[in-house]
Amino acid sequence: HFFDSDILYQFWINFRRRRRLTELLNENSSRALSESPDSPFCLRKLNPEPGNTSFLSVQTNKEIKIVSAVRRSSITSLAGNSNTYFSTTPMLVFPPVAECNPKSVLKRPVTTEELLSPGAPYMKKTLTIVGDAVGWGFVVRGGRPCHIQAVDPGGPAAAAGMKVCQFVFSVNGLYVLHLDYQTISSLIMTGPRTLVMEVMEAIE
Image (tube, rainbow, N blue to C red; front, side, top):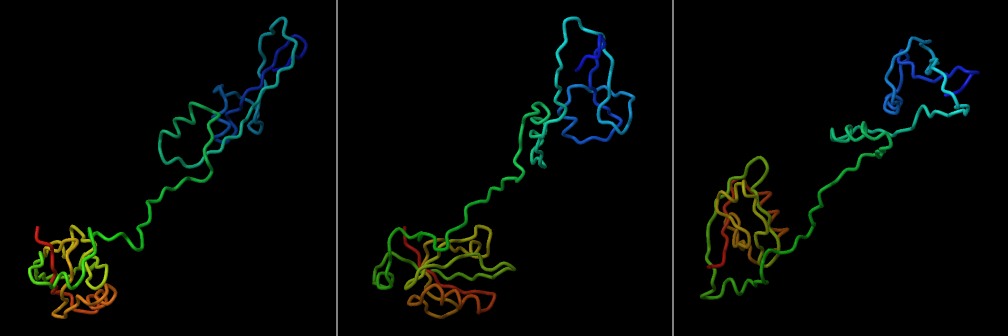
């Protein structure tokens, strides 16, 4: 506001001019006035107020950083508070990356001699697994002997009866208790789609 003799003038936003969203969010007034379309502000004559002789500075625009909000509540918050700031770079949250060498699911180490010893508390099972477009649905780890580290609940291996902690005895008729998991994985990947495996699991 400013005074010119006894006449009080006030700056008002001209809504005929195209303006940025930040200007609209920072204005308390919403009256459209018929002034020059090229001017961002227009003058409006007000009734004089006695005793007011000071020159008042009116802030017309505040800088607000706005990014595409992921949630609608962010826009609501901005409309209610003109001082709200948002980061110019959206924060992305990624799930933790799986370990390359996950911890073994075995409760204790088991040797080949223990598996083959007479009267050992292990039983042998034969599983026939037909692979799908993704694979067979299990992970082999360890070595001499290898064990089943993980089984996809919806995969072919689970449907055939494979479980974690089972030991791999043979793959397509080949005895593999003395091999490491890299060699066994190679045998499986280079073999036929229908996989015949003998596994040994603990008797509960």
